[in-house]
Length: 109
Image (cartoon, one colour):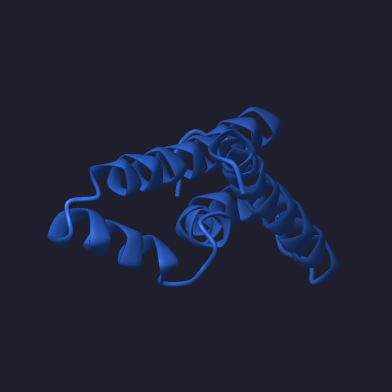
């Protein structure tokens, strides 16, 4: 796959995992009688690492690319993988900001 589509998809996959997981988890909290907005906010902060992992593929391909870059001199692979990781981090952080806006929670947990 070309780099630019992968870069964009990485961002939106992380964003979707975080928003979807948090909102669906909040619905589950509502059904069980827990406070849904506080639960959504808590889930958003907990799901950041999982959104990142799912966006970069959830496999060790990223680590193999970095290893190739370090030990075989393929620095282009390292830069691409780091940019994909940064894109996923940006998507996850955007999701947390959106959830914070929606729930109006400000680090109370």
